[in-house]
Image (cartoon, rainbow over all chains, first blue to last red; front, side, top):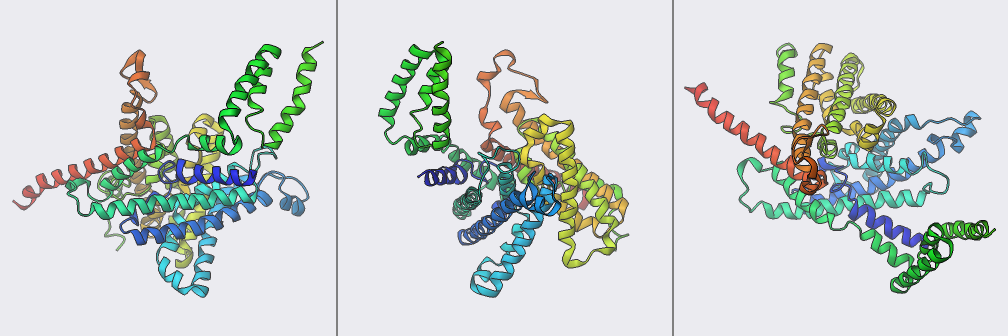
Length: 281
Length: 214
């Protein structure tokens, strides 16, 4: 349950709310260059999704096992803890380049038809910022965070895959609009990249509408009966304020709203007996 | 062939307007959209890009005789990644707040098409001096492009420039055009500015052409 809700949140958050093209501006070069026709745009999106997932998995493995401070493999080889995260940029770009090369070779050998369909897009992906950006996002959740929040392979893979899906959604919508745009009377100077960017701006405006969707889904998934739990929350908050004062009340208010998150709840229930006990004497 | 090409000074001027990396070649759009919410971030980014571009161009030009054709892109990217790591560490050490604000867009300079393009087109074929002036011209052009974008966005978005409140004064909060600081504003501004630059060059061309022919 927890895994599925996490996956749903990750997918909505990465593919729709923080869409890589429309929110973080990464992957603009293929977005402008290859969005002339829907089938080509779809091919590019599929290729990016494919490579970004593999690169995400590999970069997670490299960060987790080699680059992060106190990584197991580095400790095994060198015999002491060492922080190699300064090498991460070089390592990631190397991983992405090698990954694209291997994917290309593999496809050419085993799936010639798919290889022909991807065509020129595959080598282009090496310099697609979206992939490096996904690797850096994954690194942010592995290096420099506590062991409890550290991401596992599952989350890294989910983030990378849904980033690719988000890119595909954006580029296919854009290609559909541009196909229609060919029949429009665009003012001369704006033809080409100009009008594409303006349309992208309007598209980004539409995607702003997804903001806050993750909070709603979180509420639905984690607290199955929102109305009842809200009432209980309010009552608990009032009780808490009356009994233990502000701090304990706030604790009581957040605890019943998230019954499924076991680590949080365990932390809180461990705290709560301590709180009043300290107050009473 | 190399001696027939443009002189170093021409290369420098070429980079600023006729071959402006952002408006003419439409390269490096990703970071330029992301960091132009305010002037300070844009100028820091322009400085970082200039440092990496100049260093990478000089190094590429120095090792150009050793380059093998099938490995050259890999060599370029590794060189650039090394210089970007230096720039990133420098920013984190001396301008911590700014490095936090720029976030992942500093490492993303590695895959900035401008730098790879200049290494490939110019530095891999020319001596040190031409590639140095080329890098300086391109980075000046990029800085100008970022500055124009950031000026529009910061003025409209918060009424300030380089963090100095220029108009709206005390009650600036209520006049703020919030959209300008957000992704849609970036796309719209760049699209309109790109159209403007094309329009200016068209008008310019129409005005100069009769003089040349007549």
